[in-house]
Amino acid sequence: MTAGYARQSGEVIMTTAAETGFVEMRLSKAVGVAAGEDDLSFVVVLDGVSQDRHLPIMIGSTEALALSASLDGREFARPMSPQFAAGLLHALNGRVRQVRIDRLVPVRDGTAYGSTVEVEGASGVATVDARPSDALNLAALVHAPIFVAPEVLADAESRLEGDSPEAANLRLALESDPPPMERPGPGPA
Image: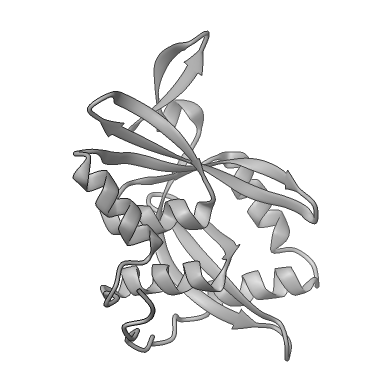
């Protein structure tokens, strides 16, 4: 079982994902959806590994493009930020032990999700705060396990309720198939 770490009084205490109630998930797809005319949103969907759970998360268009390319096995002519981060990690002989979408973060317009990337390198194990879109892009490239906190899953399930544009887009993302993506061109250096 994959281990997690919690800091208590400066000491690192090892816990397992089962002990903390986290749910192991895998990347399913990154899609663009529109519930209305001018309402294009991008959503990454995670599926439970051993549970029938789904987590749709709205992300930016650039992050969705990078994630979709990684999931499809496509490469860019020049590295994007996730490829650069993975390259740095590899150059330092480090590895991503796991990615956790582990908390609700208050933001101006409501609540976002926070994530933690657990890395291991020459100096030991450390955790790095990240946006879920960045952490998931890195996980896709380095094939790291992904765990989600129960409170994040509960929040996601509540976001699917109702008639809001966000709820409609999230439901649409769960139901849609990812469209074929055009092979990206060389782009700027």
